[in-house]
Length: 263
Image: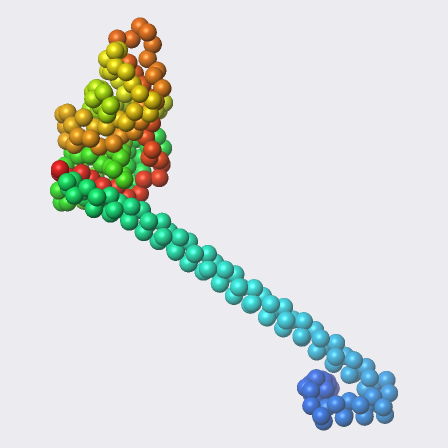
């Protein structure tokens, strides 16, 4: 019986507190009446009700703020993802437009567009993997260009992909010539950069003279731009001149290329 009485008393207190916590004309009149006529007990009970109400309000606000923070965090992440996708789309669209503009300006070349799908794992940028292969008419030794500039040639060709040896690779050798003098030589790559070798000593090389493919040997068409002649690095005892060759291409950022399948 005693436990039952305590339970009834507890429920009565809760009901009274709830009555005062719920804003209404009746609760306000009753609260004012008790404060005027009941003295300390009623006042303590009402104050306790206010404290309990404030505690519940604080807990509710914290929970509400936490949910709002989670919602804002999700929206921020989604916004960054959408922004990144849009920026990537713009870059891809710009690159593709540049490549297609070049293709339209050179109808004499049979160009097959290819996307880079793999990079050289050694980080020396000796080669890249593209998504075109024998099923697309690709064979070993074909020139690969970016915006009309030679970047390499196909090497190992599979059915749906091919490895492109970049002209910056130590394994790359190409027959090229100086555009002004029409003097031919050999382009070699390496860690220290590209060099034009086997140039006769009496050859006059103009500053920044264009270097193009010679069309001699292999499948590289003639007159594809390679780069510009730089500083001479040969010494007096050499029987041939050797000069640096500078390409305008950033080989670290190749994404969309053209394979020259014919001319």
